[in-house]
Image 1 (cartoon, rainbow, N blue to C red):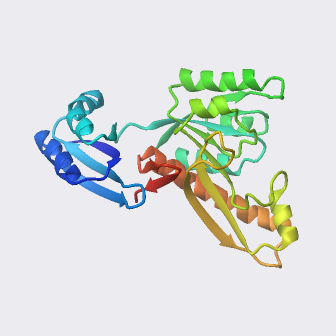
Image 2 (image 1 turned 30 degrees about the horizontal axis):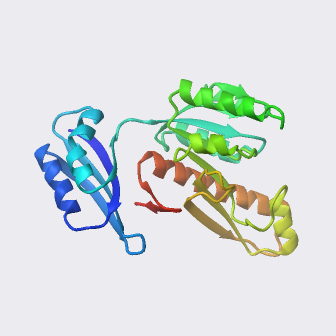
Length: 282
């Protein structure tokens, strides 16, 4: 049995699930898992179906055969081979906790992705990347060379057939042009203090204000800085007896966990865009 995942969104109306089920029946498909959501505000319907077929078929063939249903209901729909591992490029600067976490999870089989390389504007984690047998791409950047440096990132994306770019604490603001070219396939992570405590040393700023909760947000990258559709968030409570360094440690742990969840859900095709929001199926 060969397994696939169908994801779709469309204007909400009667008959959608019946049509999808009928299409699956026509292919002798068996539903392994199905999740759906209807948004009363946007009047859109979202569906994720994990199914199997008795014989393997090319995804393009299945996608073509689904066209009739897709057009009839004005769907945004995609079919994925559930066994195909996403190819991921990691971007990092000088904070390596998220990078280290993703590398370890992938190396131990906890995260079903193929990391094609690590790119950075600093050399701090070249040794870490090499230790995992991964190519390391040193891409220094200045205000005068930003366009050229981003061009090299895009070259890597195209050359390596990258499905997802992960900003694992990559501390450079991407240009609007690069954001558009990576739309829907780039994830960023940051602390959840925003819009407060902007800039350098946010945990030290938070410590000086006596915050009681530390959090992290993973979201899709858009031209609106740190305002892309949110995928996942989490928090940890902190207290007055903790130093700024301890707050930073707690924050780093939360950031690593939240980013790993977001990456997993993306590569498992559990996230569907709903305007500026996301629908994330379990």
